[in-house]
Amino acid sequence: MSLKYVTIREFSAFHKVDVHLIEEFIHFGLLEPLEKDNQPCIREEDIESLEAMVRLHEELEVNLAALETIMHMRRRLLALQERVEELEGHLHWYERRLSAWPAPPPWTNEEPK
Image (cartoon, rainbow, N blue to C red):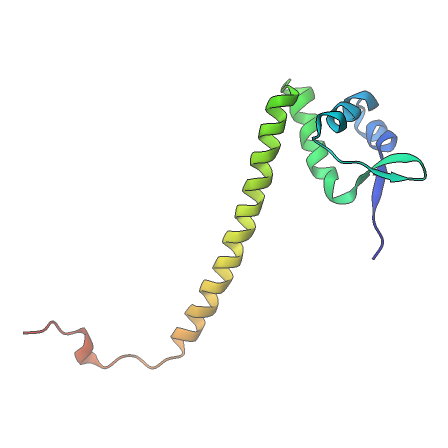
C-alpha cells in the first residue's frame, strides 16, 4: 500500500492560502507533517481536517486555541459516529437472529390471575 500525500506548497497553492498559515498549524500542534524528499507534506487522511482548519481560521477568524478545541471535538464526534455505526451493525445482527426464532406461545403474554 502506498502512502499518498501532498506537499504543503501544493496544498497552499491549490487553496490559495499562505504557506506560513500551514506552518503555524504545525508549530501549534494542529497538524503533523510528513517529510518526503526534504519537503514537508500532508497525509491524504489529514487533508480534509486541514481544509476545515483553513476555512475556520480564514473565513470565521477562529484563533488557534479555539481551533484546537474545535478539531479535538470534531475528532471525538467522528469517533463516536463510527462507534454508533458499529453498535447499529451489532443490533441489526441480533434483530435478524431473533426474528428467525418461532413466536412465543400465546399464554406467555397473559397476565397472571
